[in-house]
Length: 609
Image (tube, rainbow, N blue to C red; front, top):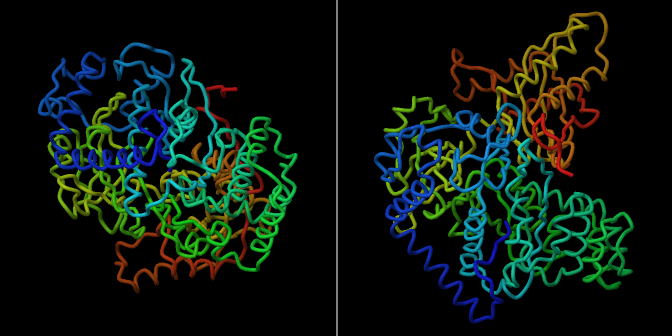
């Protein structure tokens, strides 16, 4: 994750040391008095937005105390705010949620009705997000000194954006940040010294962006001290890109030129300022990439790399073995915890094992509350209490208990009040008086490859649609389950089907391929964007298994202690022995023949040019 400076002066060694010291002292201060800081933050948010329609609607009438706030305002989900957000998107400029003008919408990877959620934001939030970024490297410097003496090779990309009917831009939070002056016009800072020129990051063509960033990263290989991307999946995609294109990249380094496939003039100009002919480096890269095994390729090509900076918590943990293979076991560092709704906190022990990552929520980011969660059989409960009960249940930041799991609820400067983020967290310790949380999972997410999140209900509806293709052949679907296969790059969804063929005509392969595409067409826009635009998800696969396979699956579950009376087929599986059992009984396999339809924005919007 990129970090941002919090001042506007070039940094000498002395000022860098002072800045690091001040940053660490700030963390000490806010974690020593989290409840006091939180009350101040709540007061500021409520005072700033005292006259907005949403707060007036619930009778808050300018009060800024915590007790009245909790008593008056309901705990809400996105669906509760949908009408207000739609009004803003359609051009209503009255102070509905925020007294400050809504500057744009940040599109969340969580989905609502098959579309990205639209999170309102205000200009001030860019400064708040930049402040959290500025905490990362002073923390990291305590564990890995000398990072100011080289560069970071980060693969960072912008994604498509759209305009709402009212003219507001809607785009992912990182695209918003990379396109802002906070990123583009940042002053020189050794901690924001990347191998990728801004022009390569801001290139809208994902292939040209990846190619040019990889080319610069290879050319500057000796200067690279840390590598990364936002998600683990994105970094692995970059390595796979290198596997496919290293010969072209070597040619460019050997000749000091850039391939003609890179047509963006700004990218070409930025890269050519860096690139000079280097036949020796090209030979070195060619030798390493030609080896049969790519184990340790990161440390071989970038020998001074000290760690890999990627998110490997939650669903990204499935990529840890692949990252370990490519990096020769370099530390996998998760630096921060953030979302489209709000930026939350930082990892104060960044060299810990991925399984031990804990985030300290920074109390100045927003007002945080926590809904206790009780999970059965490892599945997140719905937390389905009515608002009155939830109001009584919610716990403040300073009052959470070690070992307890909670759903995160936020109140932000940008106009979200007691909003359920949908993340489940577990308290694992404290920094001073501020709790530290491990990320457990997103509520109700069954499948995820990249930033996509597919729940069981959505998957079931998609499968039901696809099964219609079997009707003309008098075939029925007996059972199904699924898993996210990350052994391929990019990863892809696999659906296991047990089919009864009752007709005399064999079902053609094309029919199963149509089933694959129908499922993909029925999934949410984040999934379809990953398939069609970002290329971060591979074609969906249906594996037809032998009849009786799901009986075997039940027998296996019962042998592990499941109750025969309560057993139901899991719609998503992650346990490796179960996946092996299903794969061993697969008879045929079919892939989606083409990408599903996708375009930026909600269905009724036109895309931004």
